[in-house]
Image 1 (tube, helix red, strand yellow):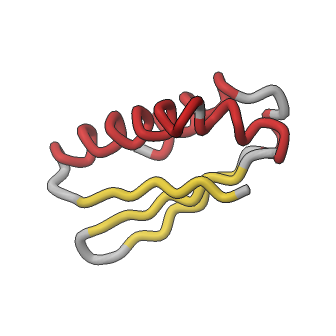
Image 2 (cartoon, rainbow, N blue to C red):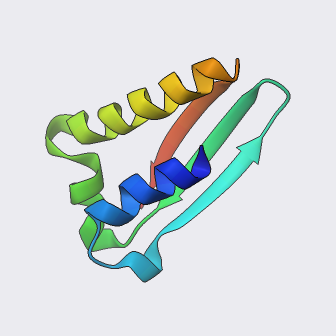
Length: 76
């Protein structure tokens, strides 16, 4: 799941070296903390947060097959 998220994020940003994805795993939930460069944050979030919401939807659909709850947080 982290690999898929990383692939999506890396294809959106210019500064690929600044991308960091931390995975915090609980008993039934996983939180992905995505850090990107300041100037790439707008690209990842998209207009009115639509792209960020789409990324969350894709990751949640993958997590549904594994019966886990997933949250994706974008940190500037």
